[in-house]
Image 1: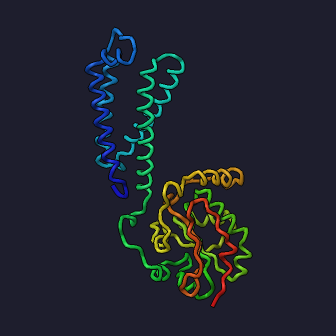
Image 2: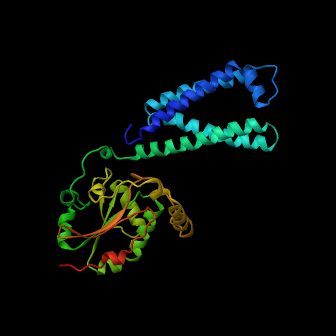
Image 3: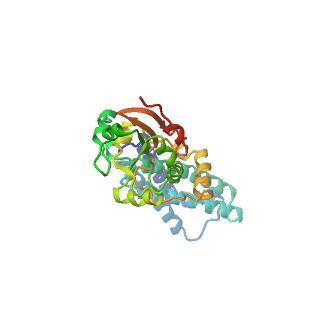
Length: 313
């Protein structure tokens, strides 16, 4: 269970126990539970007892999911949607006067709490599933070694390129990211000024070279120098780690995302690579880092022209 918080299996087991206990209680004491809820006791109790047994089955399923949350993510997804659906239906029935206050309050509160808990668990599972395999504790490559190791599609290493002219190294997020697309449009808009400073623009991405070629061509970089880094080894060497929830999905990022994606029509696309990886811009010259900009939030907008203005020795 790579990169998952230790509390997730504990919470899933707790969910399994509470569902099983609740289901057994309801199945064995159906008439008592219905009277407590303020509902009239039906002549035929079998459908209600089956409802309790279904809760027991889900309890066992949550217990199973606790053994390997990533592998059994569908169980957690089903549980999440059931809780959300149950909450919406209870509020709807209560507003229509179909069910009493006690029943609506107890079950809607329970479903609301578990909906939030399952949503948080699913977020961490998705983040763990997205993580490159090397993010499980392997040491990062030293920057000096990374400059020698990583090459563009033409076969030149970053180290060698940096001795020809300063390298304006742009680390992108995944190609479907609104802010990645906005960054490409911004760099294209300032391309002449950046190159006038003597810079060679090189992109680092997490996609396949063929995917990157199509993506770059869309933004006017048909012959762009680029490095494919799906394992994020070069990202790690430049200390571009995975972002937190607030860095990626905070209120400011949502506001900026609406502006960039809808108002400025950059849109969104399929997730290609690690969707939690942060981006950055660096200037490398003669094997040394002259300038750096690491995004504090996914929605940050660097001043590309200020970064490209360097005093070269």
